[in-house]
Length: 460
Ligand code: SF4
Image (cartoon, rainbow, N blue to C red; front, side, top):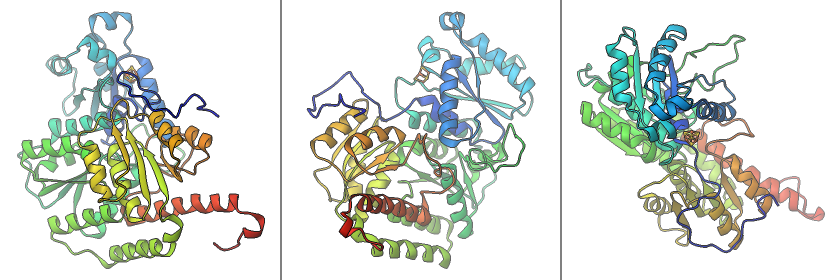
């Protein structure tokens, strides 16, 4: 009993979070910055913050994560970190030679009130930023929001700093993919390519956080969207933003800065989400959907109809990032499962409304909560009061799963104790098939484990 102190009595809390269903803002900013080619993320704060952000990303992606820090000590904590950042910019361009330094703040530098716009302007006026190089920034006070907020803010910074309203007008479609895995970004590009649509996708962490083994270390991997492509996105025909929480700020900024019309969709996880993504690409780009994509969709439908009896009516608890939870809810509902308890630590306006819409009038008894008190302790309490058949969330859910003996599907961020998420997509029809396969395997393994000897079947 690892979480033996979790009581089943749910009490109203206003100023206490226990086992938050989120992580810190700069981690998201760092992940987004890694999706820019030749970019070195820079954490404006203490070394400890930067070490935590890097190690969390490294543990999830099993890849080295390069990032710099302003290395605040007592002096910077009292007088501000301007001198540290100016020195850091000089050192980084001199030693590591990135195209871009992407600076995010931390709790400490935000509390001091460091003005990054002013510091970056000073660095430029003092000639510390070489010709053709860039320093961009976003503010990521971690006592607000979550890693999703940080990801959204850094993605918006790509637009604010680089998107060019005077860029040549093209038929390209911008895709802002939201917080998904490198495998998902790769799959989104592959689907667009199959449809013959030129896309500019950013951030793009494919070939950065899932690099092939070559025997040599590239400080800057070959992947990531280039600055030139982000600049060109200002002339694209349209933008598709995936995941309202992670992508809306960038899509809105692009629309207002460069007049590129934006369409916001929920993440293309599951059948309906992928249908909407494919249909939107088809309409915006004026292209036909190729037969191979239609066939892929048909195989997903076939799998669902063949195996539906194993998942029908199963009760599910979910925690994690809002965009992923909404998309998963819609797909689980299509599978005739019952998403009953949902918590996200990311403060998300309209979260309950989005989940209810995804439920489509099903499971009206579902309990849904977002924000600081929507933590894993509360989720565990709900489960203790009325159990579920499946738990879905990041690695931290394993304690609840073990205590309550519930099959556990690892999904989201961070996943520290399994592999696969960065290699196999969850988006698209193929991703949906993988999700169904994983859910089925969990239920079938459980059925095998619990079967009486005389009911232990070779085929199921
Ligand atoms: S101090 Fe703030 S920014 Fe640093 S690791 Fe903690 S929550 Fe994140």
